[in-house]
Amino acid sequence: MLLAVAVLALGFAAFLAVEVASEPARRHRVALRRAAGYGRRRRHDPTVETAKFADRVLTPMVRYLASLTLKLTPRTSVEAIGSRLLAAGLTGRLSATQFLALKAGLGIGGAAAGVAVAAAVSPVAGILFVPTLGALGFRLPELFVARRIAARRDRIRGELPDALDLLAVSVEAGLGLDGAVAKLTEHMDGALVDEFSITLGEMRVGEARHDALKKLAERVPAPEVGAFVRSVVQADQLGISLSRILRVQASDSRQKRQAAAEERAMKAPIKMLFPTALFIFPAMFIVILGPALINITHVFSLR
Image 1 (cartoon, helix red, strand yellow):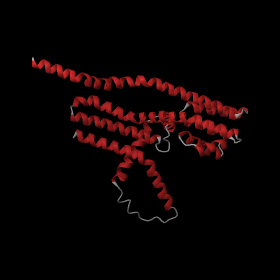
Image 2 (cartoon, helix red, strand yellow; image 1 turned 45 degrees about the vertical axis):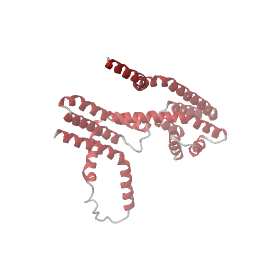
Image 3 (tube, helix red, strand yellow; image 1 turned 180 degrees about the vertical axis):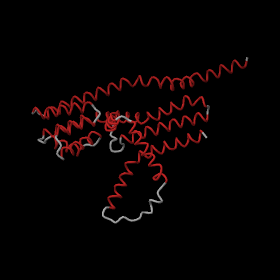
Image 4 (tube, one colour; image 1 turned 90 degrees about the vertical axis):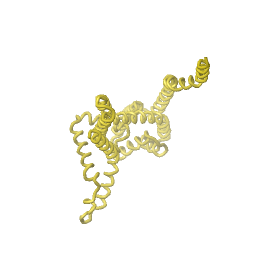
């Protein structure tokens, strides 16, 4: 009985993860259906009565769990989660509410997996596995977002020097900052260029340039972008040459990128030490000493 309950809870957690991941696409399809039905006379829809069990029962349960988790979470924590999702580039695909529901569902699923292990092994094992797997499932989305933020920060740092060089060339050619950003979005691709595209759209709809640039610094998790935004805003306020500032910023970011690459290269031997000691050396010793040990054992067995 305990194993069956654990399996059901684990299945519900897996369904919750899939449901949260597919929620934006489902909302888009619903919005398209509603838009297509505007201006038409409402008719009886027999598909409502034959809807899937997941749409009629499980989806409302997921939404209820998401709303309950949102109520139990402080507002400051929800805002912090939204900021981290923004820095990870997941804003359009995963909301803070969905993220909290995913954490709760995976936590329940991890605890259920611990119960299943305890039922299969021994009840004493449940003391260890239930809280451990539950905490691991609860923390798993946070680890995923942290890795996304770190990977996105590295990509943006790698793209920043070339982007600043193109901006500097465009400004030196006589374009304003808006035109230079437009040229950047036309000739380059990447995470940083996507953020510049959002900034360009905000400026085109009438938002002040310094406000749009400050939002860019808030969205991008790289400190170098924040330094670039502060320099551009200061140059705009004081009337300083923008092309010179862009050249200095590009050179500085390129030096930082080279220093980061050298630092990673210096850390590589230390990181390779443990896999070498754990996996390569034992296999090498077996290959080298194995035949000798077999011969020694054979000699002693003949005596």
